[in-house]
Amino acid sequence: MEMVIALAIGVLFGSGIWLILRPRTFQVIMGIMLMSYAVNLFIFIMGRLWINRPPLTLGPGAPDPAAFADPLPQALVLTAIVIGFATTALYLVLMIGARGITGTDHVDGEEPEQ
Image (cartoon, rainbow, N blue to C red; front, side, top):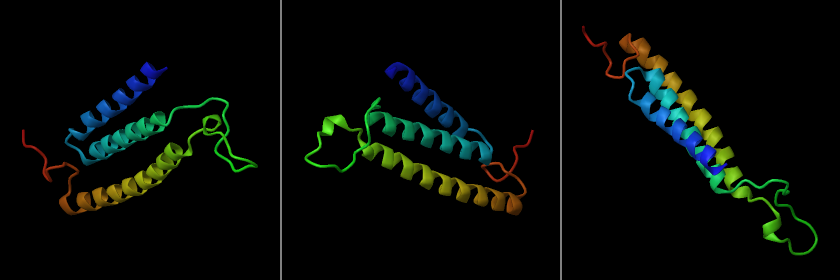
């Protein structure tokens, strides 16, 4: 299972790098998103996946930490998803504004001449 997750993270991050190197701004934005998804998956997996374990709850007595799933990676990933959505919306607005000003969506600001 670890190998499948590691390969999935590697493919996501590698695809993100490839898209960042493309000449169009939309492809660059999609690459940044794929890389952030790969990092989120990495953080989530580093918190270990527990099967059939309840979340950390308050109950009577001192709880055994080994009997509960770790909530910190889940909270970090949830926060990162929300922040990633907001920054992607900002990037898209900036991309649309830059396209309106320059007339192209090329990252250099002008189309290459052939």
